[in-house]
Length: 81
Image (cartoon, rainbow, N blue to C red; front, top):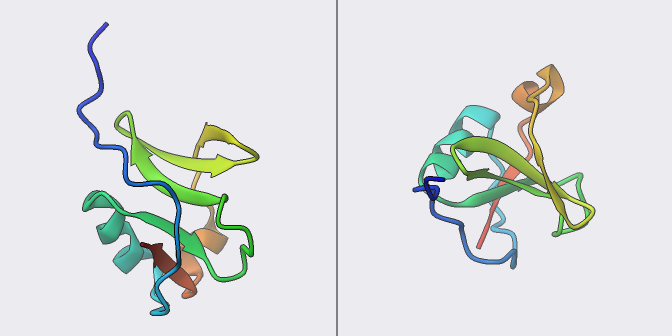
Protein backbone atom coordinates (compact mmCIF):
# COMPACT_ATOMS: atom_id res chain seq x y z
CA UNK A 1 0.00 0.00 0.00
CA UNK A 2 1.34 3.42 -0.98
CA UNK A 3 2.07 5.75 1.93
CA UNK A 4 0.28 9.12 1.83
CA UNK A 5 2.27 12.07 0.56
CA UNK A 6 0.09 14.53 2.50
CA UNK A 7 1.99 16.12 5.37
CA UNK A 8 0.37 15.86 8.78
CA UNK A 9 0.42 19.32 10.36
CA UNK A 10 1.72 19.81 13.90
CA UNK A 11 -0.50 18.92 16.88
CA UNK A 12 -3.26 21.40 17.67
CA UNK A 13 -2.07 24.43 19.57
CA UNK A 14 -3.25 28.00 19.89
CA UNK A 15 -5.63 29.63 17.46
CA UNK A 16 -4.55 32.67 15.55
CA UNK A 17 -6.90 35.57 16.13
CA UNK A 18 -7.66 36.52 12.51
CA UNK A 19 -11.08 35.30 11.48
CA UNK A 20 -11.56 34.56 7.80
CA UNK A 21 -14.10 33.18 5.32
CA UNK A 22 -14.03 29.54 4.31
CA UNK A 23 -12.26 29.98 0.96
CA UNK A 24 -9.37 31.83 2.62
CA UNK A 25 -9.18 29.17 5.34
CA UNK A 26 -9.16 26.49 2.64
CA UNK A 27 -5.98 28.05 1.25
CA UNK A 28 -4.35 27.51 4.65
CA UNK A 29 -5.39 23.85 4.56
CA UNK A 30 -3.69 23.48 1.19
CA UNK A 31 -0.60 25.02 2.79
CA UNK A 32 -0.55 22.27 5.43
CA UNK A 33 -2.19 24.12 8.33
CA UNK A 34 -5.11 23.11 10.54
CA UNK A 35 -8.24 25.25 10.78
CA UNK A 36 -11.13 25.47 13.19
CA UNK A 37 -14.10 27.73 13.83
CA UNK A 38 -14.34 30.25 16.65
CA UNK A 39 -17.66 28.70 17.67
CA UNK A 40 -15.92 25.35 18.20
CA UNK A 41 -14.54 25.94 21.70
CA UNK A 42 -12.50 22.74 21.79
CA UNK A 43 -9.09 22.86 20.06
CA UNK A 44 -9.31 19.11 19.58
CA UNK A 45 -11.99 19.72 16.93
CA UNK A 46 -10.27 20.91 13.76
CA UNK A 47 -10.00 20.33 10.02
CA UNK A 48 -6.99 19.43 7.87
CA UNK A 49 -5.87 17.74 4.67
CA UNK A 50 -4.85 14.17 5.51
CA UNK A 51 -4.29 11.24 3.16
CA UNK A 52 -5.48 13.39 0.22
CA UNK A 53 -8.88 14.10 1.82
CA UNK A 54 -10.45 16.90 3.80
CA UNK A 55 -10.67 15.48 7.30
CA UNK A 56 -12.20 16.65 10.55
CA UNK A 57 -10.74 15.58 13.88
CA UNK A 58 -13.50 15.13 16.43
CA UNK A 59 -13.71 13.04 19.60
CA UNK A 60 -10.13 11.76 19.15
CA UNK A 61 -10.83 10.32 15.67
CA UNK A 62 -10.44 11.50 12.07
CA UNK A 63 -13.53 11.54 9.85
CA UNK A 64 -13.98 12.46 6.20
CA UNK A 65 -15.24 16.03 6.26
CA UNK A 66 -18.41 16.57 4.29
CA UNK A 67 -18.41 20.34 3.89
CA UNK A 68 -21.80 21.92 4.53
CA UNK A 69 -23.32 25.20 3.40
CA UNK A 70 -22.89 26.43 6.97
CA UNK A 71 -19.15 25.72 6.74
CA UNK A 72 -18.87 27.54 3.42
CA UNK A 73 -20.83 30.62 4.51
CA UNK A 74 -19.13 30.96 7.92
CA UNK A 75 -16.62 33.79 8.31
CA UNK A 76 -15.25 32.73 11.70
CA UNK A 77 -12.54 30.30 10.50
CA UNK A 78 -9.17 30.57 12.23
CA UNK A 79 -5.81 28.87 11.69
CA UNK A 80 -4.34 26.79 14.51
CA UNK A 81 -0.65 27.50 15.14
